[in-house]
Length: 311
Image (tube, rainbow, N blue to C red; front, side, top):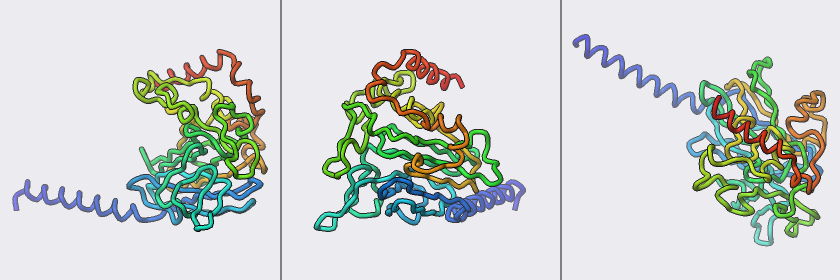
């Protein structure tokens, strides 16, 4: 065999081994867990949707009674989203449905279906670019429950951007009337969710579609600023990346997802005023106060978006 042929053979062998190692590693679970805890005064039914091509978690939906927790092992490379469903029940035919966050499967498990807006979403991509975990809490599809995501990196070594995020405020009562979702017969009284302006109005400006479908043409609006002022680390509109995406060292970092965290003492929020403010641990804005928001807040939002393009 010539030298060139031998080199080619070794190159093919190395490529084969890389492929085999990648496929073998894809099915191996890391030590990472996702732990969901319900501190609401009512039952929450978490829903889970894995991204296309991602390994699946062991369940796609279950019930959490007040005070209950459940931990799920998360395999390497998992990507997906989870949320809390509320005011759920089964009809006479046994079909399961929820007033908020409904996934439309007709069952307790969501079985590949996503959340019907409005719903507070926690989104994850594990072992992504440069081996990092990427995560966020998004109000782009609206809001239904307070939610906190708290990373737990081994030995505290998750990196400078490995921070808690979420929205600990109950925004339903403060939701602008045109975005408010009533109980729909769920018996809760008052608002049970707050729609996004995109869902409410469907315009290109609010949905970042069409002529507004890029970060240079889609800017914060008064409605997205209502969400951003309340919960500064949560996504408030589609291009709110600069202040809303977080990263931790991949592999061993686990994540605690708490529904209604303001109903309990979450240590890292309760003892850190800056962190509390960042996830909305201060005063909820009055229902009408967002309409008279000082123009400096809008300008700040525009400046933050512009800076994201520079850096």
